[in-house]
Image 1 (tube, rainbow, N blue to C red):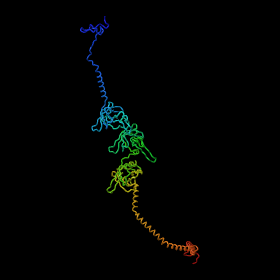
Image 2 (spheres, rainbow, N blue to C red; image 1 turned 30 degrees about the vertical axis):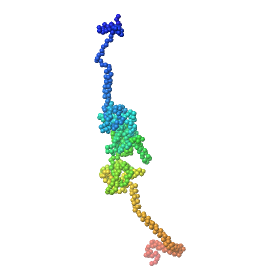
Image 3 (cartoon, one colour; image 1 turned 90 degrees about the horizontal axis):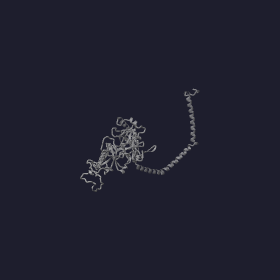
Image 4 (cartoon, rainbow, N blue to C red; image 1 turned 135 degrees about the vertical axis):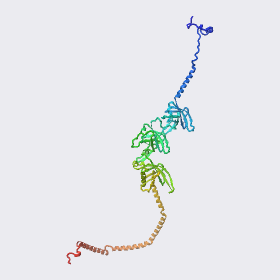
Amino acid sequence: MTSPQGPSNDTAKGPNEPSRNAGGGGLPPNLPDPVIEPRSRWIPSLVWVIPLVAALIGIALVVKSVAGRGPTITISFVSAEGLENGKTKLKYKDVDVGTVKNITLSKDHSRVLVDVQLTKVAEDFAVKDTRFWVVRPRVAASGVTGLGTLLSGAYIGVDAGKSKEDETHFVGLESPPAVTGDQKGRQFTLRGDSLGSIDIGSPIYYRRVQVGQVAGFSLDKDGTGVTMQVFVNAPYDQYVGTNARWWHASGVDLRLDSSGFKLNTQSLATVVLGGIAFQTPPNQEPGQQAPDNMTFRLGSDESDAMRDPDGQPIRVVMNFNQSLRGLSVGAPIDFRGILLGSVTGIAIEYDPKSRAFQMPVTMNIYPDRLGKRFRDSVPRQNTVAGQELLQKLVANGLRGQLRTGNLLTGQLYVALDIFPKAAKATVDVAADPLELPTVPNTLDELQLQVADIAKKLDKIPFDDIGNNLNSALKNANSLFKQLDTQVAPEARDTLTAAKKTFTEAQSTLQQDSPLQSDVHQALQELTRTLQSLNALSDYLERHPESLLRGKPGDKP
């Protein structure tokens, strides 16, 4: 009977192969034996696929890492505080653009060198004007920054540069820049006498509105002033014209005038932290918009900034023969209320010829402050006409005088004025500095006069005068005693005789006395005689010929 699975394979076995069905094996009868065929040798084992795939992935990651890696740069800092190898990040706008790879010391051990691996997207940061700094918690004039690093740790901040020149070595900033390269606006340069209370980040005001900040400052090479870089944000930079005036807006400006007390401040922040303000001068149109990096003068206050340009100063020295207590460097030079300059130096010199001390005071005087008409009509000081004018002014009494500016503090200032009654003096117009004559002030003159009067009074011999007066009083006392004892009795007798004489004269001059009657008759006769003479003179005036012919009717 044929099996449904096909004919039996027993016949296909070799003569030497025993049948699996023999001996009563466990397999059912009539089942074929399995055929075993070996695998081809050229097909790899699956065990090697996994490391191969891992290697391929590693190679891909390495290629991706190398392809996404930017250049390596080196940044030098004063200190590596808060920086760690492999952990500290380089961030731009809080986006990681690099990692610190190595921190070493410089050869002279004065700085630390930080190697930073930039990412591919940050490769354009490796240019010459890029700036780097360490972001840490800081308290500055602009406020408190970097508080987030208290938990996350310090990181390196970056301000992308715009240069086309590649660079791999940089000097890091010790503090964050006040203005970054992506801010819109304009930067300007200010030159002033002192920094005042200004710091990086101090505000810039225009009509009391904050429009910018101080970006940096430095001391001039000659040490005579400071230079500041300020940044005005857009669109406020359009208000900075070529005729803009800048001044220190920090502190409190307290003034007392005819209107009372005036208190001027920009804001409470400027009082504490300092600030700078700018504005176009009153009654002037805003000039053309100032170009980037234009240089302006920084005034000490608003009145100083709004004053017309001073021009070149004249160096002047005045020698005073009095105490300079109360006079200080910076004291004003006043000409009838107009501020012409300030004192720049105070010294003392000994003159061997006169064997006296002189107190030379040097100062800078700005003649242009006397007004436009003066500038137009008066020749320059270094010309012949200007020298002649100066000699004429000195001949007419141009002098310097110390005056008291404040009775409470005793502060002095130098007054320049015309004193017609001043002693004659000359001036050397070729000297540098120019020496102008001086006169003592009114108080000193009064003191000299009082001292002169005191000297004259001191010469009067009051002791001798007192002794002589005492002697005169003693003599007068003795004289009065003598008059009372000797002269008085005789005087009484004389008065008695005089009284008798006056009585007799009175009796003689009485109206009914004979003398009075005789005198009365004599006066009557004299009156009639005068009347006759008067009639005769009238007749002769009318008939002068009667002196020759006689009266008419008289016979010859």
